[in-house]
Image (cartoon, rainbow, N blue to C red; front, side):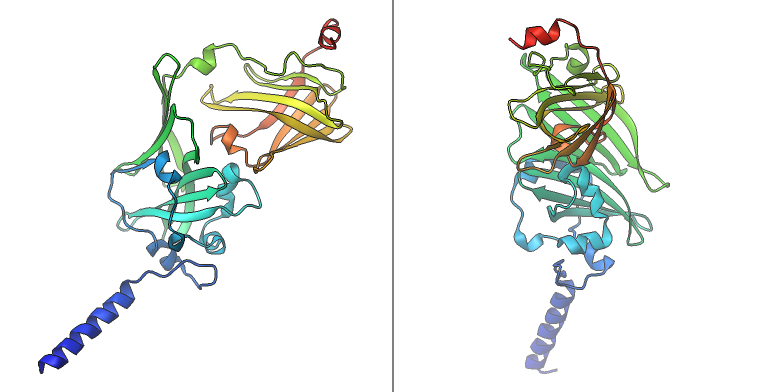
Length: 324
């Protein structure tokens, strides 16, 4: 074969190979199948370490996964606990690891406003099976806190939250998950040396404010679970403070804000410049709290702002004291 022909053949092979290896962009304007979606994720070597700092870095726009494309293969409801309903976080691929003749693990990054989250997705035969939130953070996390996740060679996920206390002690909370044959992630281990939330006195930051409105008061649940309401200087508003602890104190949430009275026995909190929405419905001496939109910035990822609480009887002197 003439050398010019040889060069032409080589160039043709390179061109064909390049076309085949070029990954399809996952734009909402493109027709995408499951194989394209999975192939878009780069391969990662195990063990793989995902730190909150890596989620803060800006991702290239060219890697963004269209929200319609994502929802085609993964229920977008998995994002709601963190980002709320009717939102469209920007989604980017982090990586994938495939088990021969088994499941495929995909890692994604989701970002909206100041919120960042990393998730693990499981596919079997190109069909979505389960999702696990790994790291939830913000674009400007507290300097004394760190959250990381690790995927090891046995496909065990470990999430670790650490914070440095005022005395310099490193406090941590670790959870370990595995994906099982039932198609769900199972928590197999919880470990923590952070006992501060269990031992310190729970302080109510609005405790000394007035209790004139009929709905004000302290509504109590289990130990260290409270929904407290006080008068607002704004007409039609109620100041509130919520603190709850579930699963033996391993899942904690806390929020202070102002709810708008929406009816004779109802109020709603809507976060300014954020997705968090909570409904409060009153009946007699009880209040039912329900998280309507994602309030993940104010709680751990495994529990929600929800439950029924009973009002503690107001003391006869409390009202007079607080009106001063």
